Image 1 (cartoon, chains in turn yellow, red):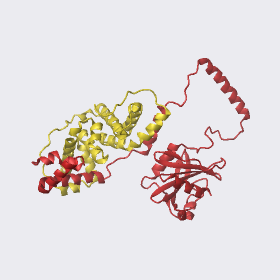
Image 2 (cartoon, rainbow over the protein chains, first blue to last red):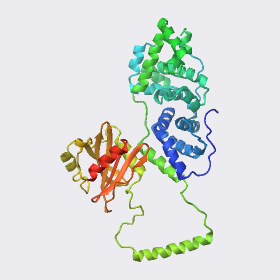
Image 3 (cartoon, rainbow over the protein chains, first blue to last red):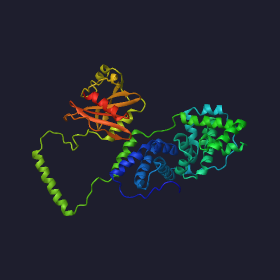
Length: 188
Length: 255
């Protein structure tokens, strides 16, 4: 796996390491929660999973040798989310990561602008995407991560981050411009 | 989607991940290709929709607290030397001895605090949490007024003490209001001052401890605070302004 050495879950940390963790990692709590929230689609579950991920990060903290603390933390949050999904909602992980870039039905920018300016609709459309599409979009558009950071966090090769984003955006456009009724049927 | 550029360059361009020459090449191409120009417009409108609509969800305040408590529990105490068993017996005996002496010698009715008398009766984490919470929309003031004669009486009946309230607009610290908050399990008064575009929270609560000078500044998560006691009141000023500015306000209040 690319990215950081997560270290071994090891001995208890001391007060100095606690202070360093507070300074480097804890400020990214919002980023951690936001990512979990969009992978799990539930604020409640995200609270539990974020808490668990933070504690796990703390135990691995000796394996963090500086660098991008946010990406390091988000990598752990993401892994914790998927472990949780496997255990609690395995069906959600069955959707294949669609490799094909489909020919696009023409979506007018105007129609998209109207649909995309409604928080409810946008949030719902985002939630209909498979988690692996959702996470790259959230990392890029909400968290402002670079391709390199996205590759680190999601463990996909950096060369495929762009195509993953392209596919995710296309899926989101489709979800957004479908009439709401059809969208509801699709969920059933 | 027939244009090759749409597949290979458009998203990298939108995301600012193309190098300069590739980016320039794509821009030249855009002038000629209607398909790419339209796709670009679509992508940009989608992006601005995602970014403008408040989809980012911040962690609830309580979660930060819960996590801190768990971290504390997972942290080793500063000193934990190994002590042989027989020493425990000796230690227990001496504790018992000291305890029984103190029982007789200790003045009755005093507070049983184990805290350092120079530090405030709440933790830095609680203080900074309260400050950050106040900066969330709609949390800064319960009574918004630049008039000290409005803010001071507002606290009447809401607290069992009357915090001193003064406006220092002429010195560059304008009072913008007050609110009630809870620190270390106690109700406290908070005076809110504005310094340019920054806010300063001054937490005030009564104390029985004697006056202290303004203590050296504390720093946590990018916020500074100053603590002092004066005429039966405990003060803590917190902000992201410079220490010099914070100190200036502390001195104005101290006088």
